[in-house]
Length: 587
Image (cartoon, rainbow, N blue to C red; front, side, top):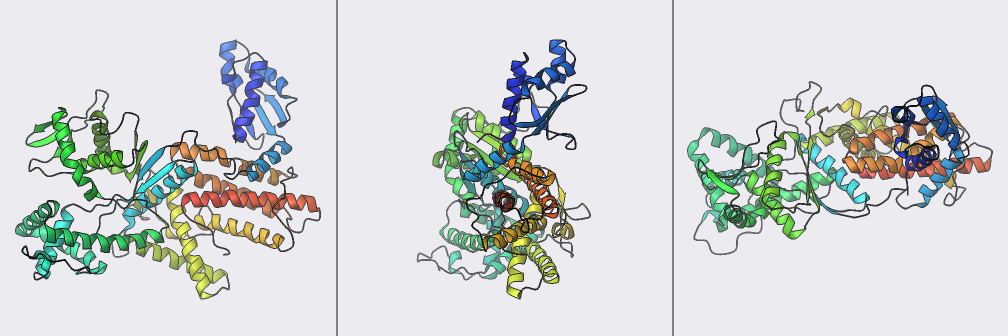
C-alpha cells in the first residue's frame, strides 16, 4: 500500500507535468508550518532558474491543475512560490480504512526478501551481564524485529566470547582451588561428571579473582596462557570444564536476556569458528593475500581514499595465536557456509569501528564474502550517568544488568502503588512491564551512535517523552474501547471524515505509519520509531481531551471515533512490539 505522502506526490507530479514543468520538481514534504498547511511543495522555487520564470507564476500554474483533485481540501500558491496543501478529510478517512483492513497496517513487504544475520549481544561467558551490554541487546533486538516486519528472513546471533584467555584463567584458578578434580588428571579415561563443579555465583567470582591475581603473578599468568592453549588444542579435561562453563553461563544469560525480552536464534560463539581458521589461513597464504611482518601474519587493507591510517588486518600473532580479527573473519566463513546471508549487521560499541573496517575490507578483498554481500557496522554510544561518565553503581562499580532492571522495577512499583489501589501481585507484574518499557524506550529514543544519560527519574516518569507515557496512552485507549465493547461490536466499524482539528491531526499522524516504517527500516533507526509514537501519543491525547468520545450522542460519529481509536491502538502496539516491549492491561 502506497504511503499517503506518495499518493499526494503522484498528484502533484501529474500537475507539474500538465503545467509544462519537469515532474522531478514536485517533491512534497510535511509542512514545517502546520498552522498554515499540512503538506507543502517548494518545487516552484527550484524550477524558477531552469524555466526563467518567477516562482509564484510556476506555483500558480501547478495549483490551477490541482483544483479539481479530490485528494485536496485546499491547494494554494503563496509568495514567493510555495504550494501549500491541506488534504480532504474523506481522502484521509478512506486511506485509514484501507490501513485497518491490511494485516500489516499498510506497510509493504520487501519486494526481494533477503537473509539477514544480525550479530548482537556479544557477552563474554563466565561474567555477569552489566550495563555495558544493554545497548547491543536492546538495539539489536529492535533492528531484528524491524527487518522481520518488512518480510526478511532474519537470524539473530549472540556471538559469545567463549574461547579466549578468560577460559584459561578460570581453569587455572579452579585447579588452584580444587586440584583433585578429575579434569586435571591427564590419565583419567572415564566419563566426566555431568554436574559442574561450580555455580554461576562461584563462576562469576572465580574469573575476576584469577584475572587480578594473574596481573600480579607472572608465573600464574603463564600457566593460564598455557591452559588456554591446551584447551584450544583439545585437552579432554579442559574441554569438559569448558562445557560446564558454557552450560552454566548460557543458562544464566538466557534468564537475563529473557528479562529484557531479547531472543537469539543462534547461541554461537568464537569457539564455533575455530575449525574454520586453519583452512582460511592456508587460503590467505596460498592466494598471496597474507604476508609476514615482524613474525605476524597480516593482510593489507588500506585504500587510497583513506584520510586516516588503517593498519593491516592481523591474522596470526608472531607466536601463531589467533586474534579477534581471525575469529571474526572465520565467523564470516562459517556464516557463508551455513546461512549464505545477503547482509550481516553488527550491533557493536562504536569504539570498535576500526576493527570492523579492517575485518570488512579483508573479507571483501580475499573473497571470504561474496561481492554482493552487505556488511554493516551499526555502532552505538555509551550509557552514562548524570555526571556524564559511564554509568556506575552508587559504590562506583560497574552496575550489573539485573541490578539496573531491579532498580527500575522498584521505582515503577512505588509509582504504581502511590497512584492506584491494586493488589501487590498486579502492581509487581505491571511494574515489570512498565519498567522494561522505561529502560528500552529510554535507550532507543536516542540515536544509536550517540552517548546518552541514563536518568532513572526521567525514564520512569509518566509524563514527557518516556516509555511509561506511551504505555499509559495505550492503556487509556484500551479502557475506552473496552467500555464501548461492553455493549457494542467494534469489528466492522468504519473511520469517518474528521469533524475537528484534533481529530484530523490524529488521523494524519496515524496515516504516517507506513511512511515512518519505510524510513526506520531503510536507516535501521529505532529512534525514529520512538519519535513517531511520541507524536502519535500526543496527537491522541489532544484529541481525547478535546472530544467527548463515549458520551457523543451521534451514534455514527461515535462509531467513527471508536474505529479511529482502534486503529491508533493497533499502530502503537505494533510499534512498541518492534521496539521490544508491550503494554499492560491497565496502569
